[in-house]
Image (cartoon, rainbow, N blue to C red; front, side, top):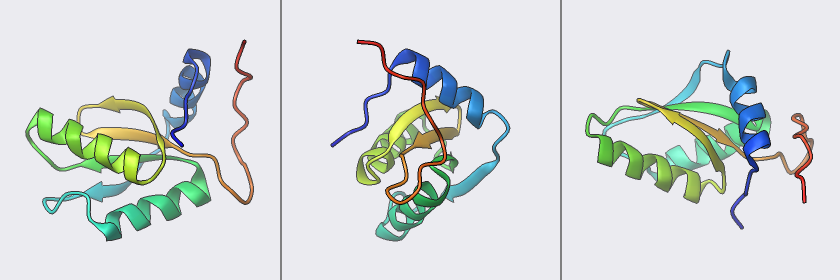
Length: 103
């Protein structure tokens, strides 16, 4: 089930991710099972991560980011250039408390 974020939650997460460094880098081989496993483990531990994509072509980069977010069950918070911010709440212990979604 994909995570749906409100505009306020998205804005909050962008602010939280501002000072983060890129934790993982996706290279020329693209999104492999090993990369998905690393992203899933990082999301479980940190909930909010930055991933750097090494593809030079914009369409290829966007496809890699979308594929990575889908396969890791994460929400894409933002993408700027070669960097994507992904969010997924931890199943064991939540560290980030999102603003409430308004009905």
